[in-house]
Length: 306
Image (cartoon, rainbow, N blue to C red; front, top):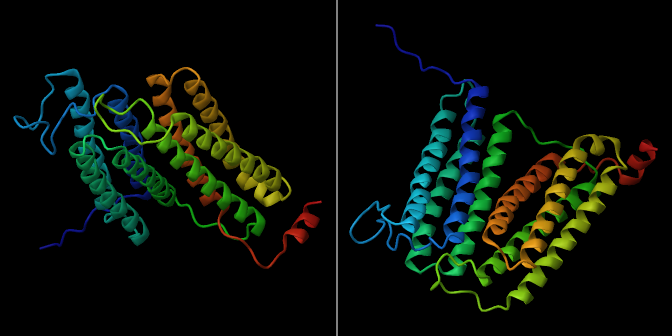
């Protein structure tokens, strides 16, 4: 009897599996926002059942919106599990890809549990913040998995000052996202009329968030100026830096427009989608920068550039 050999999966096909997982992780951020912005946060008042009578109930509009979001979580779960299983069938086994895929699975399980806590605490804003921030962690991890599956390797030899500036930009950008969740938690879109709100004046937290955004954009401009001084960094990082800057400017514009127009739900939804894109751009920038070289000083590199 001839022993069967398992059919190997090509890296290119596995890359498509990871892209599908990342796409689903991004989509569910938007569908989750739609639940809140349509006031459907308690459309299903129980968990894991929709309510005391039914596991699935789409008899009301709010219930249908919340239920569809929950059901889409199943799609996300299937896709991240597929990323784990498919990694084991690669022609060349990659432990790093398996670990990242398992991290996504753990994160999605955490999201399911945290989603239950959000419902059972009547949409507590702190729980909602955690729900969104965990989503950002998942889309960031998903992007790392996609890039590694596509053959990305850590770049070395980047200017030390550029690496430091990149990390500063990513940290400041992340702080801006966190302060944005505080604004959301203090604002009018709670997901339900009876949901609790953070005890902050919306004007105060919006001002703090605005300052963090301005500081972030300023740091990106400084980074862009720095990158242009070194040929290697300019070739590799100019695109990622410009992408972060472009999304950041659009995001800031939408934020100011929504604030001065009584925070309409549609603009808030766009703002949340852009926040997801902005965080992905930050992760891409971090990965593109790689690690610093301590063998060549920035001064000597600048001399070579001239």
